[in-house]
Picture 1 (tube, rainbow, N blue to C red):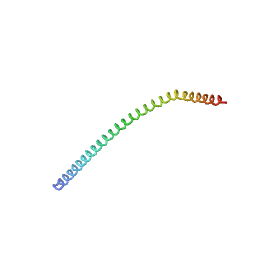
Picture 2 (cartoon, helix red, strand yellow; picture 1 turned 30 degrees about the vertical axis):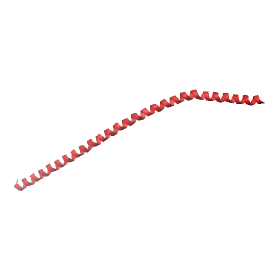
Picture 3 (cartoon, helix red, strand yellow; picture 1 turned 90 degrees about the vertical axis):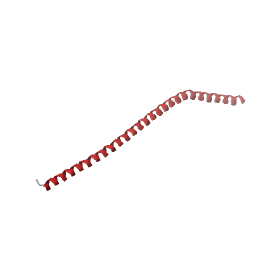
Picture 4 (cartoon, rainbow, N blue to C red; picture 1 turned 180 degrees about the vertical axis):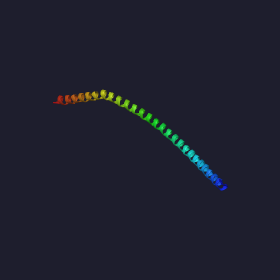
Amino acid sequence: MTDADADRIAKLLEEIRDGQRLQLERQAEALALQREQMTLVQKQQERAETLQTRAEAIQDRSAQMIARSRKALAIVLPLIVLIVVVLAIYVAWIVLRRW
């Protein structure tokens, strides 16, 4: 092996080393980007869980309101019907009394 061959081999090894160094730098950048993306995904997941919890609470309150409304309607509707019937009887009595 001549000095020229040794120089060529040394240059090739330097190029390989430089290429590996560049590749490691790019991998480090890619890992940093992946970490940032993972952090963002975790934040989004936490936000989604918070929104889901709030939505469930709203649905629970809505279900309670509907249940209370149904109970109130079961009480109020017969009273309204009774009042209308009593008023109708009273009006009929007034009209028939004058004849």
